[in-house]
Image (cartoon, rainbow, N blue to C red):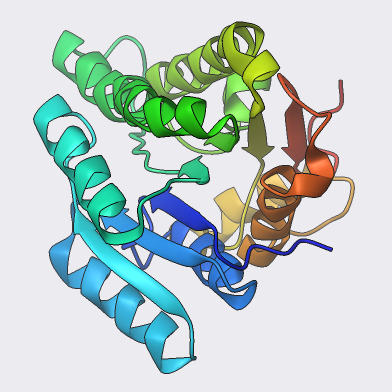
Length: 252
């Protein structure tokens, strides 16, 4: 099960040492996929590529600004020139900001939406073309528990709004193109054990943990494994779904 040998997988935001993206990329590499490390952080891109290759995997680096169409189109063209196909897109790139609505500026709102929603849109639109030609594709979008319950973990209202927008976008797109062999699903992580979580003051951390029935943060590998399933051929009849990975902090 979960064979990705010969497949090409793009993971945006996988050059950052602070989030989930690097774990996602390494997980696909272990399944013999050729993984494209796409991030604006050039040093982080190279570091992740080097780590995957050192472990015997196949990886290609792509320094990209997901908010700029020209940059995204150039990345997709480079991937097609290198491998001739794109099978899976994981839209993981995202940013957050802790700020109240009262103190929020329109620039804050734009900045969050530019990465979390508009960047996701640009990457999806660019990768759809080769997927449609191949009549096959898997797109997995990273939303958040904050987009479903309205915050309560990290970020402000603009972050929650952008992650809620991801869910609506994904469902609509699944209606547009799923008949062509392309599935679109979303994953909604809750509190995950990343560097951001580790930096929280203990009092704040304890308060969040109290709201999680499992009594602990999730691990990046637990999110990556969920994404791996949704991107697999075995998940061929799942589309338009949103999968919660949150230890029970939010239940539909």
